[in-house]
Every structure is written in C-alpha cells, then in structure tokens.
Amino acid sequence: MIIHKVKVYPSKIYLPKKNQLAWKIAEIASDNSKLHKKSVDMVINRIIDNASVAIASLNRKAVISSREMALKHKRINGATLFGVSSKIKVDCEWAAWSNGTAVRELDFHDTFLAADYSHPGDNIPPLLAVAQQKKLSGINLIKGILTAYEVQVNLVKGICLHKHKIDHIAHLGPSVAAGIGTMLKLKTETIYQAIQQALHTTISTRQSRKGEISSWKAFAPAHAGKLAIEAVDRAMRGEGAPSPIYEGEDSVIARILNGKKALYKVPLPKKNGEKKAILETYTKEYSAEYQAQALIDIAKKLNKKIQNLNHIKKIDIFTSHHTHNVIGTGANDPQKMDPNASRETLDHSIMYIFAVALEDANWHHLKSYSKKRAKKKSTIKIWRSIKTHEDKRWTKKYHDPNPKNKSFGAKVVVTMNSGKKIQEKLDRADAHPYGSRPFQRANYIKKFLTLTDKILSKKEINRFLNCAEKLKKIKAGQLNKLNIEIKKSNLKRNNKVGIF
Image (cartoon, rainbow, N blue to C red; front, side, top):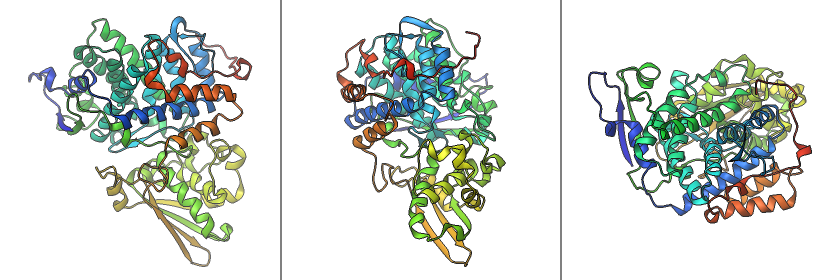
C-alpha cells in the first residue's frame, strides 16, 4: 500500500492532476490488476448477502416507495428491480435507487469501521444496475465491485467525516464512480472527473442518523449511488468537475472537513496491485448497527449467567468513543430511550438492543423491533437502567490499524440489587472474520435462506444461488440472472401519487 498525503493548496499554487487524490483513485480504477481468489469469493458472498436482506425488505414502506418511483422510469434495455419480473426493466440509475434502498433498509448487510463508518455493500446495487444496462459480464462486475470496495475502505481509513457531522455516503459517491469506471474500462481522465462530481454532489449531514431517525437512512446510500451513475454519465460525455475536489482552496476538505491546515493520509494499493480491501470488511449476523453485534453476543451469554433479570439494578457498558457517542447514551438522544421510537432509531440504540437481547437470548430482524416488543414493561425497565461509557482502551482497539487487532466490542458490568456484579466482555462479534465463528459461504447461504423463507420458491432460491456462485462464468448480457423474482401479487403497492 502507498500512503498518500492529502492537504489543501491555495488557488495560486497549481496542483498537477497526478498529485491529486481523485486522480490517484482513478489510476487504480483504470489499472489492470489481477483478481485475488479470496476477494472474488467474498464478492460472491456479498452479492448473496445483499440479495437476502433486499428480499426480506421488499414490502417495507421505504422500499415500496422506491420501487414505485423506479417503475415510472421503464427502459427496454435497462436494469432489473429486486422482486419484479426480469422482463420489466428501468433506467439503471432508478434501479440503483430502488435496489439500493432495499439492501439498506434493514441495516443488515456488511460494514467497515475505521476513522469513519461505511457499508461497502452499498456499492453493489448501482454497479449491478449499470452492468445489466450495459450488458457486461460477471468478470466485469467482479472487477468493478473490487475497485469500489478498495476505494471506500481506504477513504474510510484515511478521512473522518463523522467528526464534522457529514454523512458517510460522501465516501460512497467516489467509490461507486470508481467502480463503474473499472467495469466500463474508462480512461483515467474520465474516472477522475466522475469521482470529483460524485463527491461534490453527495455531501450531506449526519442529521439523517440523529434524533428521530427516518426512512432517509435507507434512501441515503441509494441516492449516492444514483448520483454517482449520473456523474459518470456526464464525465463520459466530456463534462468536467469542481477541481481539485479534495485539495482545492474551497474544496470539501477546506470548507467542510478539517480546514485549510488539514493533513489526511489515505492508503491505496500500488497501480496494478491486487485489490483485497473487501477481505477487511464484515457482514452482520444480527439486524442491528454493527457496533451492537458483539454486544448482542455478550447479552446472550449474560442471559445464561443471570438467574433473575428482574433483580438487575443497573447495567454499565464500557466501550469505544464511537459506540458510546453514536448508539450509546453519549449521543444524548432521548429518542434512543423511547418505546415509541422508529425502528431506524431503535436500531441505533444499544440500550434498547442490549435489553431485548438480554431478555430473549436471541435477535430477530423483525420481532425484536416490533412495537409490542419495544413496549414490554420488563424490557423498558432494563433498557432505562443501561448507561454507556467511553473507555479509551476500547477506543484505541477500535482504531488499531491491524485488522486482526481491531476491536468493536465492550465490557459489560451488570449490578444486581444485592450489589453483586456480573461481568462479560468480548473484543469482536463471534461472526467477525477474526471472531470465534467467522461467517463462511455456508453462513451467507443460511442467512439468505432464513431471510427469504416463505417469500421465495425453492426453485427460485436454487436458481439464484447457483447463478451467484458461478458469477465468474456469467457471460456478457446475462447479469439479469442475478435478479430475484417473486409473485406480482405478493408485492405490496403504495397508492399515494407522486410527481412521476
């Protein structure tokens, strides 16, 4: 890996393109690196993972709305929509919008955490949509996904957006643009302009993940993917972009992030180097914010240790700065303690998640978030007894540059009415690549089967899984095989009329 130093330059100092971060990203997107076998296998895992969570969310409100919007933009040689007959196609940017929303809705796909947060699987819907519309092959799609993961993971390592309350989709726009550039074999110059446009248009605030969290949390990455597709389209037509988008005097860094004296260090592989960043990412065993994964495992273990949960006096969770301030009591969001809060809000409340997991010794993507479950008196009692604390030791482990040492865990101290203290700690979720039982292909398939149960026919399940596992062999123009269909009568509609 090469560490690129990124800083702001005043307009009077000319910064050559080849010294700009967007150009360096474009160079690795337009190179001819060899495919790494384990990386290719992980691409297949994530395509299966994305499909499972997308199908499970097809009849949720946000997904229905996104699908209705997309269906108003039909195109003969377009892209497919999850759940809808593959004979019906729409413009690729609208397929990216709808499918991206479906993938994100349950907050149940992959994650990467470092200086900032990300869900790299958000790259797949827009890339797949473009690949379908442009009649590309499975190999083209694999290469594009590997580039997109490489770019997003390394931007997340080097540039913190959350510090400035900028939503993490600002790293997604450039990664999608880079991935599309790889798939379409575009020139470095074209990808460079597309990356800059994509970043410029995908800056938004973190209010989408603060307070009463709405359905926009699901729409946000889909919106970034859609904008990135449009940015590539404009760049392919010869249009330029605000430049240099990272280093300019009034750039993103200068005006939105660390300012004119900023210095960021962004790692990227050497040109033609194998793209392996996808192997550093991890999916979710439970439908909850990733930093809650290890805590759900802890709660399940504590359930076996505590004889009577009614005798709990208080629960203290010692964890990292990010966990405490984003999903813990450090966020200072009263909504995180409200039984009437939205599912999206409860998903970002470790107090709620831990209380339910402790009582049930289990976690379910639907039942654990039901209104009835959230209003259970015994749950509320435990929920409101929980307080989180930042422990600098956990923060240090959270930011460890070595993937094998990086930790997203916590120590939990349960104090009983008798004064007895019961403790449990865990560095990382059991399903993490370096956890006690890492997710393998069989686990991804099991997750797919669980989430699509009673939604898909056995025939459609077997057909899709067979195609996904043979992704490398899918010929040009045949990527529609990665779509999944269900009966039209089983797809709910939104009768409200919009502009389209």
